[in-house]
Image (tube, rainbow, N blue to C red; front, top):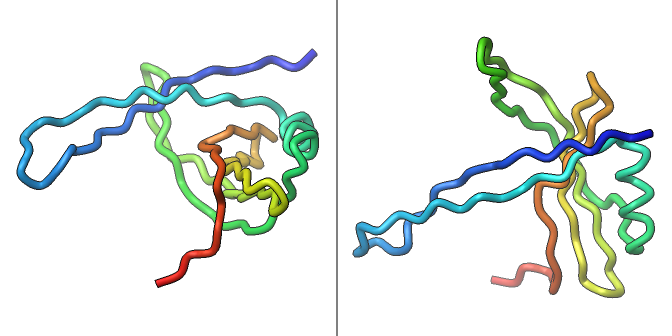
Length: 108
């Protein structure tokens, strides 16, 4: 049985240059083993189209460290949906970092 891990990611975003208000956004992150995550993406017709690498700080209350991950960008070109997945290869854990719709080419 797969264990689903839920964590809270917190990001700070300023509303505008002239505003002194800062908002705190809490973003739940869905994690599971990579094979299950990949099957979930396939169910939505999304396939990996780009990848990169990244690092993520972690803490467990006693220690802090740095984890390395592969960033996989899944897309469904027919529907315009997309999902960014962080794959931590040391633990075979995949976390859905972000997802959305209306994907299109960037044109200057």
